[in-house]
Structure formats: structure tokens, C-alpha cells
Length: 248
Length: 248
DNA sequence: AAGTGGTCTAGACCACAGG
DNA sequence: CTGTGGTCTAGACCACTTT
Image (tube, rainbow over the protein chains, first blue to last red):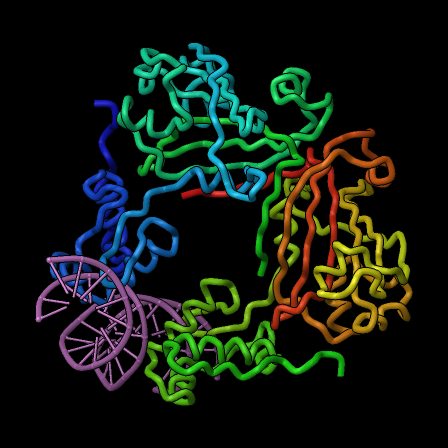
């Protein structure tokens, strides 16, 4: 068994009903009892099962819809939202072809190795510096043009099944691979954005001029119970980057 | 009168009650009938005044709280939120002193001129290229160290009162000045983030090495009725920049 | 004690999806 | 037609703030 015990029960008396109910529903998702893309029980059923009024169920679901864990469709039901990291990616870079349509970048694994984690990476996993890890170097391209260079670190034990697969058969997305071969599912991610002048090595791989500005995205991918699964640093030319925020 | 007619009534029959109520409440804020920092009528009073149930009022207020236009305090009341653009700024740059405490940057107006808008700026105001404008160049510093260089454009007519004030008396924040002398209130802003290699001129002002990476924030500040008030481009060293996002 | 928002209920009716 | 979520109501009681 790879995954440890899901989490302590945390019924937490004296919290509002809708709050406890929300925790209960979250747990169903976290333990994969309810899987992404599938409908959860109807509001009436949940109200009966948890012995609360339907209004309380709605309030619990409301908050989960608000932060993107559920989706509602009138007349159809309420569904566990499938996290779409593709779209997160497009939030940062404009990967558009000449006709203005978004395209999925092609992935090329440049290197796969077993290595010792540097301190910054180990910290994300709550491990000691030097912990054994699997490391990928990956280039993502659109129309043969390199757009993002990625440095990916995974804890060895949980991800060692990946060492048996030929990197040429990895496909363009890693998360489905993690799910299929390592039994872990990425549920959310935390990203930090910075920018820097490109290093000589990165410039060569990204086909940029020396010293050109690159955007750096550091991502820690988390499981539903918020364990760190993957540490990733992505670099792309600043010229391709744009990001919008609304401030109130 | 500087501001044009606020907006058409838009009662829009057949919309949900709470939706129409939300529009009505928004209008009270937009027309400054309810001012930032002040409490709005109690839920019971609003329910009576609009002839709806208190639950419907709560739902309308819920959504306005969710997107940051109102704030609720149990036992005290519901208040119009005062937009805090200071904090938006800190979201992007870490302006911390040695003790780790956030500090308000000091502002220095480098230049004030009347100029013709370039196309990119005019577009934000929905004006023709070459429209008359007031332009500021401003440097913001912390501990004598330049951190952000700003290029600010304002439509001439509405902001010409600013030309009469000595720039030395501008203070560190512009928005209060706009409110005080031009009768306009910034209610929200849209920002776009990019990065670039610093130009020779900017490098000199920001005291950076030639070609160093800088983060560029382009901001359009909007009034409550979403008219563009100000166009601003801010540049700061990428090394001081960091931004975090949570993805689900 | 009086007044505010916060939680919770039980039910009615509407709008939409799908057999 | 049945079942789903979406809207709306009227009221009870609780928790917090202020007088």
C-alpha cells in the first residue's frame, strides 16, 4: 500500500453543520469513494443520509463549488470536478497556433535519472536533503519550437514504477502516468512565479539568446490529502508569458 | 459635472430576485449613496424595503461578499469594502524591510507632462490614438532603493485639476488624490503581468545592470461603473518579484 | 436588553435534462 | 413524466456587539 491512512476523522463537534458536512463530502473525494467526473448523491439523498435539511446540504455544496471541487448542472446532478492542469498552464503562457487556437504542447523527455534531492526540493516533500529521488528533464514544444523547460523531482519509493517504462512512451502528460503506474492522483498544486535572466545551459535548450528574461514557475503538486507528490520547476521565455488578474 | 450618467436602470425582469437585488445594491455603491467603510442597511431592513425574504437578501449579499465588494461583521453589520490597492501591490512584490515587515514605498514624481496617447493607451480608454492626456513618470522607493518605475496616463479632461497641484505635494498614493481633486473613485483594476529585459533608460532609473530581467505590470484602473480611469505600466526588478497561485 | 449577522429548518414552486 | 438542481419564503434559534 503506497498511500498512508487518509486522515483522522475530524468530526470536530461545535462546528456548523454545513461545515462538517463539507468536510465529510471532501473526505469522500479524497478517499476516491467519489471519483472525478462522477456524480455525487442528490441533495435530497445527502440531506437524508446526514440527517440535515436540504438547505444545509446546498450550503455545503455551494462552498465546494465556489472553490472548484464540485460542479453543478441543473437537471443533471452535481459532479466531482476533474482538475485540469492543462488550463492552469494556459493561464500563464499563450500557446496559440497561427489561427489563435490553443494547442497542447508536445513533450520530450531529455533525461531521466536517480538523484539526491537538493535542500529546496527535499523541503517540499518534508524529507531530508539528499533523499533519493527520480528526476526528469523535460522540454515542451509547439510546432517544433521549444517553449518550456522543466525540471521534475519525484520521491523515489512512490514513483519507482516509472523507471521501468521507456521514456519514449511517456506521452505528453505526466499526471495520467502517475495515476496509472503509481496510484497517486494530483488534486491541486501550488505555484510560485518568478523571473530571471536565462542561464547558459537553459538558453541553449530553449534556443534563446544569452541573458534573455525567462519566467520561472515552481510547482508543488499535491494529493487530495495535501501530501506533496511532485516538485517541478518550469522555465519559458518571458516574451511568451502573460498573466491577468482582477483586483478589487 | 465630470461623471456622465451612472448607468441605465437595468431592472431586467425575469432575472432571479437575488440577482436583481444584487444589482440594486451595487448601484447604491456605484452612485456613492453608500460609501466605502460605511454600513449598509440591515438585512431585515433591505428585505422589507425590497419586499423579499431575508434569505434572498442574504443570498444577494453573499455574492457581493464573495467578490469583495462588501464585508460582514457578526453583530455589527455589513459594510462597503474599501478597496486596498496597497495590498494588491504587495501581492506581486516583496517590499519587506530587514525585519520582515511590509513597508509602504515612498513615491517620487519624476516628470509630469501633457502628451498625446499612444495607441495602446488610448485603446484602454476607448479613445482615438493621440488623444490628449496627462502623463506621470513616478519612481517608488524603499529605504532609498528604487523598486518600481511607473508610467501613468490619465485622460486630460477629467484629470486636469491635477496640473494645478505641485507634484512635490502629491504624497505617496495617487488614488486619494484622484478622489479629492477629480471626483473619481477607483473601484477595481485589471492587471496583466509580463516580463522583459530592462531597457537602457529604465535600467538607469531602477539602478539595474543592462539587460537585467524586469517584471512589467500593466494596470487599467476602473470606476465602479467600469469606466477606465487610469492606465499604468509598472516595472520592477524580477529578483524582487514573486507571486503565488493555488490551482485546483 | 436590543440589535446585528450566522445557522438551520421545512416546505413550495420553477427550470431543465432525460427517458 | 420523473428526477435533478435553482429560487424563494417564513420563521426559529444562536453568537456576537453595543448600549
